[in-house]
Image 1 (cartoon, one colour):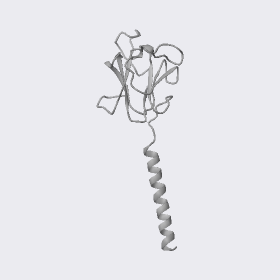
Image 2: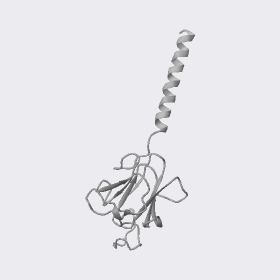
Image 3: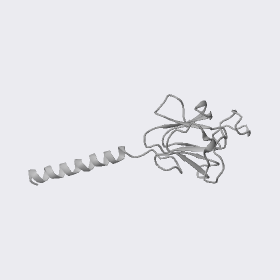
Amino acid sequence: MSMLKKFATVASTAALLVGGGIATASTASAGPSCPAGYHCLFEGSIGSSVHNFFNSDPNFTDDVFSSGHGVNDNSWSASNSSTGGYESHYYKDANYSNFDFCVNPGSSVSHDQLSDDFVDGNGIGQRDEASSLLLRPTTSVSCF
């Protein structure tokens, strides 16, 4: 094999490896049943009636699930498909007050993982308590 052919083979192999690495590095962190770039709350289990958030939302009172039911104090599961590496931090009250739980990029939390006292919106437990969402860069808080 001539020196020129060897160089061409090595160069094309290196280009494929570098190209593959770039493609892999830009892959979004996808949580289940949630479109890329979104943070999703579900009325029931993951895949049920959903509301998708692209940005932080200080107050869920005007938000509705795809079923038409209100989101505020009525969510059971969450999924995070952030394309920017943001954690989903949910709070029990409007304006990011009283931390409830958070979900890492590419992860989710199902209804059976969140604590519940079966009284919606009373500030006890985690399920049926979320009233606001703050997107945060990686934190030291332990998230789902």
